[in-house]
Length: 203
Image (cartoon, rainbow, N blue to C red):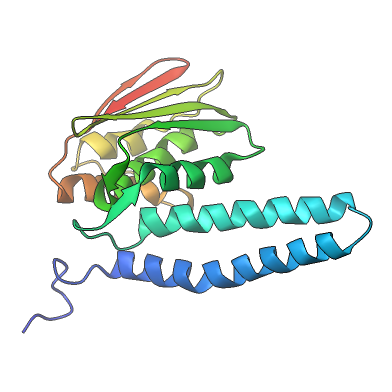
């Protein structure tokens, strides 16, 4: 009988991510639905309600994104490209960051989980906005980012290509070690190139 220390059988971090997102997504969705009803019934479409609606939509998209990035993913689970694009579009709507996703219609949820974690790493570097392009061709993932201003933390990026790296980790950067763990778990190898205004990643 396997014990709780058997991490191959029990991924507590992913289970926790799934539980939190599951518990939050329903009430956030209910708030959004209630707000829509209020806006339909109200004769005056006040800017405050529009702002609340935009915030609720963004929160809902973030929770859906986190559910994939931090939640449980099994090899047999699949995700459609339209669903992925919808999550990313809703998450970046009205913001300074844009994400163009180019992939086949059907993808392994495990691979999308890794891609989302890596996307979070790239997003950290594009704190002032920019453009990210994701392409998948015959199982090879390529992410390219462009921005007028980058914020790169070299020790954190070393972690993605060097498992022996030991940078300081904070709640704001926890996606870096999680991405490194998922890359190693699925026997992937990430290569990274950096310029003054661009990033190119492949795995």
